[in-house]
Length: 291
Length: 315
Image (cartoon, rainbow over the protein chains, first blue to last red):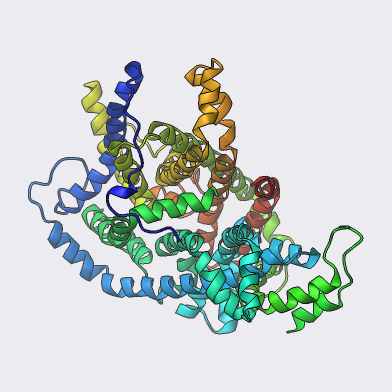
């Protein structure tokens, strides 16, 4: 939708800074202090501990490691934590869930936003009920067993799609309502059927809100351990499930260096995506929440 | 599609809404916005969301467990068991306190950050990005990180010792009252970046001339902020409070990684109880707690839904 803004034209006109007393001049210092204390200390702890030997990391502190062995620790975790398999497992779950929930969710949202009447209101209320109501995580397991989907990727994808469908429908329906119907009518005049109108007119217009929903749902599913534990725990590896195992295996050994190395490995993909696309991600999230 | 037929045969709802849809319009809408578009999404919702929820109401009243092959109804036995040993009420109390504390802290932090970082300087832009890093991190990782930071011989005590000049060794995660508060602060720490973004977006949508008009009328900068700009942030507040409240009621990872429910089960929120009980093979008990969580959230959510609806109508 919005044209990507590169370089100088993106910069809006900046008013000349007006120093307003002491508070305004202290503000940058406060920002730096806050970033260092509130974010710097925890993140520093992760990096230095991940680079220490087991003995040094036994009681993790902020000191520098006597010898940096970040690569060795990452390598050890890569093998012991079975990172490649878990990474693949995470991808296998995240990609289909997000694709499914976005496609089917926006199809439903289009209809829910455009129709009026009591039945439609009831359907909409049902569709967004999942935003507030918690999923019945224990009986999902039973149901999946009855369906023969227990422990399978298909079952996990279905569960995530069921949990996050409401979120997508809520966001997208609100967005479709702001799109004028006359745009659709123009296409209909030219002889387009509903499928054609949806695919070539509505879907492209939904891009900003779909981007937001993609980011949020990717975040939730990529980092989820609770539902994964119930549905696929032990039969399929995902990154958070393996972190849980690495950490619990070290319960009596305190393998802090391995836990933090794993945290780095696991957060890296999201951090890289974020670093590359941060401007779009931020405008997507803010645009989606407060229209 | 059978669902489509249903609307066609349904009598027009003209009595309630005088300006409601006429049959002709309904038929036209069936052609332009066919109801079968709803089918796949509702099929998924039905199988993976509604059906397990219905099951929740059934299996909470059985003796389903991993120790027996048959499942028999037992009435309210699970409830009375959980009530009698006090687990039910303590878990409810802990979950609600946790959710309220998270909503409070997350909004305070997020709002403070948004106000502090409002101006578009390069420093503020960088700081905003840094505060978003925890949002991307897994909640499990955040829990382990703070467990390490808050150990009695951990970094926070080291830092405090260095600042105060005398040895500090507070067992931060050892108090049965304050550990829950700390867990809520950490939950808020993880998500405050997102709250900040939404407050920033709210602040950005307020036109500048509104504030300028207030200044011309003689308002101080504090007055202009609290009486003019703050009320206009209402939609952002609604969104942030609702998501924080509901999100933390479903919380698990942070507390599990931080304390595992301890000390003395003082941080055992409902989902940790469900996870632990399920792991022990006591499926029916876990289901009962899951039902309790469902009922509690449903009860608390209705006011929240009403507020969200209102907000939607305004915008």
